[in-house]
Image 1 (cartoon, rainbow, N blue to C red):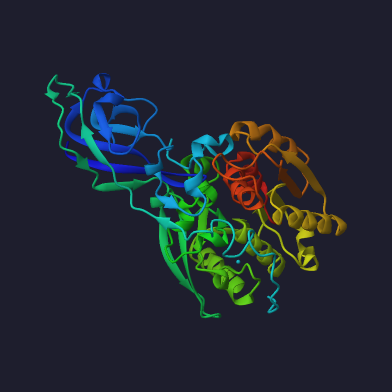
Image 2 (cartoon, rainbow, N blue to C red):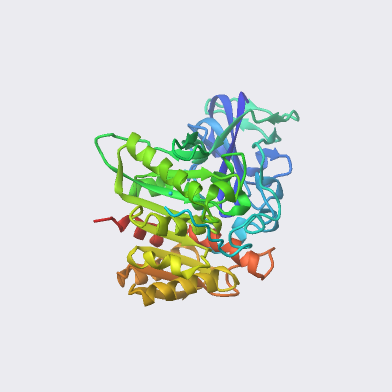
Length: 435
């Protein structure tokens, strides 16, 4: 073995180490490999095959790299940790088993509902989020045969990976914006389409995380779940080539979920600066967020009602319903869980307000345990109604992952683990365009 690379993926409950690529000095015979050929400390080996690159594949082929796939169920798989991620597994919940992998004024301050839906005590806020660097210790316990017939005998000496390939996460740039008007600075992650052509015009998706994942580490918002990375996945980019903007907030003061005008103005300033630098279509700006990120999206929507073409709101609400009236003329798809004692009644109140203001709304209750494929016909049925506002409540008792508790907070957190896997909602977002 020449070297080893740890390969990570982001799931609904965070980033995990899911494979190791070992480089050899010559081509390896794929037909002679099996899961029993290697041992990875504290991990379960699920598949072993050869490849021509240090990357996972649907099937093996002779090459210099041996790929060792690892179970995401392993406790040692976890790289992202918060108060909830360690209690459940992505592979135990059908609707969020998908991973994101290669296969934006008023000066008034109005406080929305507190935890669990927005503040530091909610979302993953029971424990400050942490992120470990991926590393694996691999031992070749069986014979590896080259395509030339030579045999590399088993060796008791373990090799520790020296490189890391963070799928999709590594495709984002970590940058910092300072707003000339507010004087505030904001860390952010930016995904630029891989085949970016300045002669073309691209949409931009803004994702804002929940209050529980506030951090000074800009990678936290990318690794906490699917909300940011799903839009930059190869399959999504193949359909909807777009920029993805994911700010990393350090708390309510810069995230704007408390409605403070300087924070909202800074977020809008960041969007404006990117639209000025890149060929971004201002008629196709979209916002989405979970919990506090949805609250900030709502605040941006009524503070700057002409900014976004559409909003995808997940597990959030706003207390002062008189302020949300401008949203009646906007395109919105909202997803909450019936078991979320704040976001469900809160978003229902918003929808009732918008309906009184003349908005046409489609409403539905879906099973929160559906797989991405099973969600598809439900999303298609709602999209076919062509209403500007869509409201989905995930049925109580179907949302919380195994290992968690059937309570309001866990319903809250598990809402976004399901919501961002729903392809039909993502497709709907890109169909919206300002006139």
